[in-house]
Length: 268
Image (cartoon, rainbow, N blue to C red; front, side, top):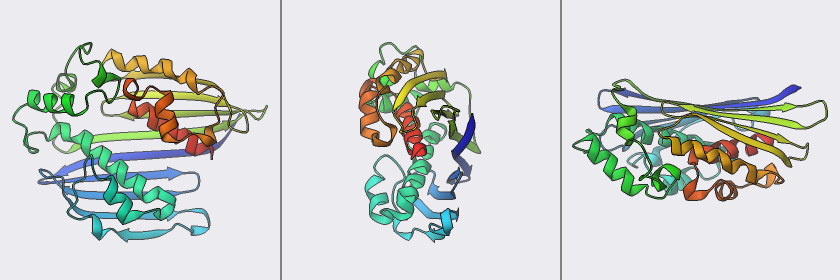
């Protein structure tokens, strides 16, 4: 078995006084790039945004650019339209995806700055997100079955500098019979899961499994059962919407969907 492709997304959020610095580095067999957002800790309004590509095939994507049009935007749930307007398809969509990863990191890091964000207590913070994300994934669809609130899951894990860390990695191997074995891993400050897919050389999925090592509640572990629905489908034809539908939509897991989507992109 020969490794033929590797890709990593590494996201880190740091706090420095009244600012948060979110950075996502993308390292793959053919590309090295990063995006960075500097935001106000209370408003999450963007103070600075830049992205760089250091390595790409024939240097076609190489660049260094500040994105002035993102300044003043809130780096949060509704950033999508601003990213599309300011970045379009720069880098084949890579710029937009990197800034989206930075934003996802900030949203996760909010757990440790909830008071600066205007919440009076951990319970108030939990109550807000329980209502906002109701029926958005298996966890928030089954709050009556969840053993403990999100902030109780975090416990005494108080952070004042390195607030959040995440790595998503994908490895593609070619077997002697030309089948592909693709492994995807997601590990962050709160979750850990892995996906393994065996596909024919044309991308047709023969086997698909997943398992969770860490998650906020046992209900999250139940998402593994959805992976069998991918068998028989072609990786190259899967959109993120297709994957979300197969993996349960509101009864699924967004992190699992992201990981399978990364696998489909790596196969290309």
